[in-house]
Length: 161
Image 1 (cartoon, one colour):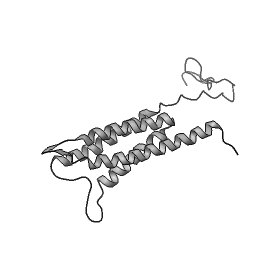
Image 2 (cartoon, rainbow, N blue to C red; image 1 turned 135 degrees about the vertical axis):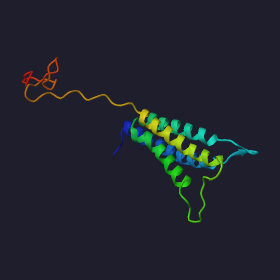
Image 3 (cartoon, rainbow, N blue to C red; image 1 turned 90 degrees about the vertical axis):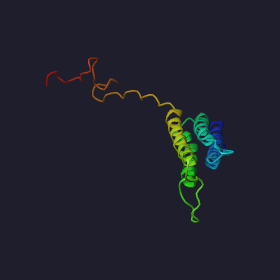
Image 4 (cartoon, rainbow, N blue to C red; image 1 turned 45 degrees about the vertical axis):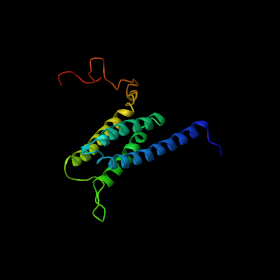
């Protein structure tokens, strides 16, 4: 059996979406590791900016490859899984990736919140809503208005009853 070029393009597009999911997982891990970044004594919150950018760019790229909400949601889901899994949960030894105490804790929470908000909004807006399906013809009358007249009253209904 040979597959059509359209099916092959679909498979290659989904493989590229899988690559974008892997990029999102690595971006999430890198962003968590950049939370305590300092220049001398000054905390530099670049992780917040990176989380916003990665959760806007990666889902939009996936939606451009495969125009579906699922494709747009997969990179964000990979990022969210890493951010919650490595960022908030403790390891058996008691270690955490996101440090606590001081302003670095706020940068960690801002990274999670900003990335989650940016990813959610991007996934919702990435694929425009489809058009409403055309009205089905009414079985009784055969028209496509569903039995509703231009005045908004159903045929057969009497006003005032």
